[in-house]
Image (cartoon, rainbow, N blue to C red; front, side, top):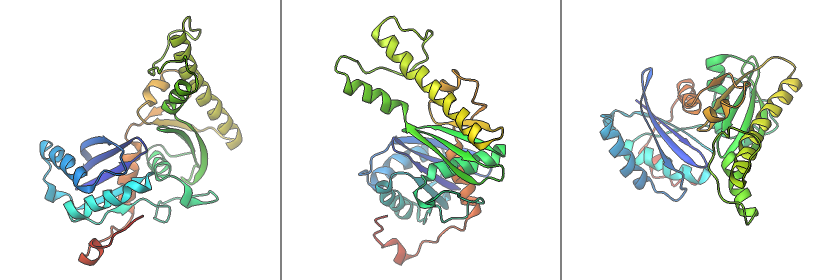
Length: 269
């Protein structure tokens, strides 16, 4: 069985893949200081509840945009599962060209979304990921990664509005029935929601115009269904896109082996 770990800025998602099915998916808040033993105490209880024997996990792959979290996640795999994990990096075999100025600077999640999106839908594609940042990634017909756009995430915008304006409250995210708000909170909700819909539609239109050909738009991330309600530009919602990218990447690359000497190395990557 394959242990898949997707470490984002807000949450870390752990999943187990057996054959053609996911056996379980769990998430925990990202904390770069959380130790491998803390992860293990939490994860082993969930594996036991799902009926997944610890000893049957024999491969692992990690994708992270939080470098400080990698050390403890790697130690989790080594110390508790006796696995040397594969780490998602630009230098691996992705099956496509990474056509940007500095491939090593591209977040692993963006490449993983491109990989899984093209495997499922072909190309050309725009992949919109509603995470801590809202990213728009461009995938060519042959699967090549062409770069994209990074915008502030919706929650960052809400927090910035609340902290920068003393009289504006912190609000929740929802789709307002009306654009014109008749009180402060509805006006803020409208600005956040419909403002982001405008950003989504505007950037998709500009990317398509610059690319010069029709493009399928797919969305992922926890808020993808909410914003897909407000626009016709999103064709598909794929909540497990990054996990699927990690699964595909793991199938394309040889997995490192764990030696006693390597297990003792203190890796600060």
